[in-house]
Image (cartoon, rainbow, N blue to C red):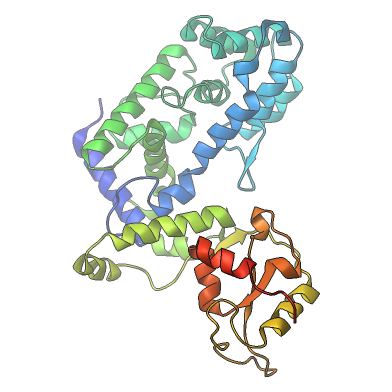
Length: 374
């Protein structure tokens, strides 16, 4: 049973940390907050990628003993997300499991157990006990194998870290050297209790994995900041820049802007008082398309300093005296468009942004119908 007083104290520390690191003044959900999404959101990606690699719904009985099931399980563990190795399994176990060093019996027995687990053939508790006999008391590995079966019921474990988290919540529970089904069941039930306590605090859309992240943050990330959560600014500004895909970053910004538009002027002014002056650094990985400079120059010459959509003069001249117009592909290169003179136009910056934000059919059709000769 979690102590309500200790949970409240840890939740207050958690909020201080979140407000300092994200610049927000209100915590609505794990998925909508920059800090929790950036630091913990990768777990959902690991889960999805692991299940895709595991592909257990397509397993057949004749695969048992073929080593194919073992290979699939290795692929579900030895993976990289956002340039980082899977950290939900003790890294020291991964190569030993892949090579078969951890397997105490034979691969066929392991594959039978994994088949029974993922295809719901036998009792999950019995399988856990038998997997422990085959793989040893490697808690993080066994818990991970259950986690990727169903994150709504099972969670990965780091015994030392989560023992610390539960201690902070006043729970008399230890997972270290306790790799057994009863202990793992209690672990998941305790995190489910954390989930409901977070919901009572008004946090929206809390999943079991979010509650897992809450425990991880209070036991690890806040440990370096002191009990009061202060000093977080040092950690924030000296940390390495995070790496994100361009599409993910754009969607995240759009989501934040949409949420900001819904708040009142007074609430906006209040939130602005608490945001840090410095900004986080991000490395955005983008897909670039090689464009032919001859095609771009042809379009600019054809436009002759006039936007080909609004027919207004270019807003300014560049240092070399030529009008500033931007090159736009009517059918976007990312959508399979070609880099040729019939698909390329020269636009003023306003019209260029309009085409990428609205891309109205009437504008597309107008640009397609233009005479493409100088």
